[in-house]
Every structure is written in structure tokens, then in C-alpha cells.
Length: 141
Image 1 (tube, rainbow, N blue to C red):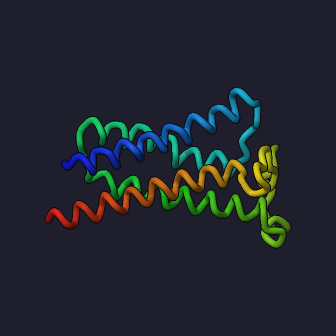
Image 2: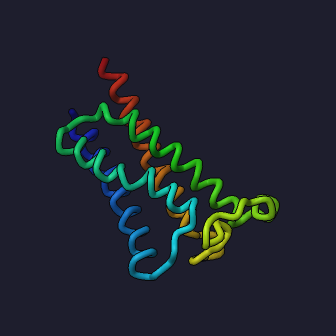
């Protein structure tokens, strides 16, 4: 494994850890109750901290396909969640979910940064870095 690949794995781990800690901060410290879609996004983000952390320790870049799948699925859910928060035609047809509506916005920094948007950025970053790692693996063969 090259030093660049090692740094990419570390970057992926830092992003997943920051996203996980951020979601825990919002729910446990700020007291924001996660909606159903937030829980689903957590299901795809939280394991990445462990998966990527173990891969980093083992110097295993072959984990790229797995992290890419988790990040793409989680990113699609984040994109939909962000859409129902910001696009009226999606919000009007959004299913009700649990005790907290998925269209609710606990934060709205600069008029567009919401919690699902932050998750989308994290998933997109991890997916992009995973694709990069996957391509470096293909080049080595």
C-alpha cells in the first residue's frame, strides 16, 4: 500500500468519524430527536467508522468497494432527505415518518445547510475517496 492510499484511508476514516460525532452531538447534546430518515443514514455511516478504521490498521485498500456501496446508498438517502426538506413538491408528497417529521429542519445555516446536507457531503466525500482507492487498485493489477 502506498503512502497516498494510506492517507486516503485515513481521510475517509476522519470524515466518517466527524459525521458520526456530529450526529451524536446533535442528538445527545443538542437534544434533536432524529427522524426515520436520519436513523437510516446513521445505519450507513456509523459502521464506516469501524470498517475504515480496521482497514486503515490492516493497510487494506481492498475495502474500497464496500465503503463505496455504503456511501452511495447513504448518500442517496441523504439526497432524498435534503430534497424533501428544500423542494416543495417533494415535501408535499413526503411520507410521514415517526414522531419527528422528516421535512423538519433543526438547523438551516446560510439558508441551505441542514443535517441531511452535512451527511450528504460526508457520504459524497467517502464515495469519491473510495472510487479513487478502487481505481488505484485497478491500476496496480
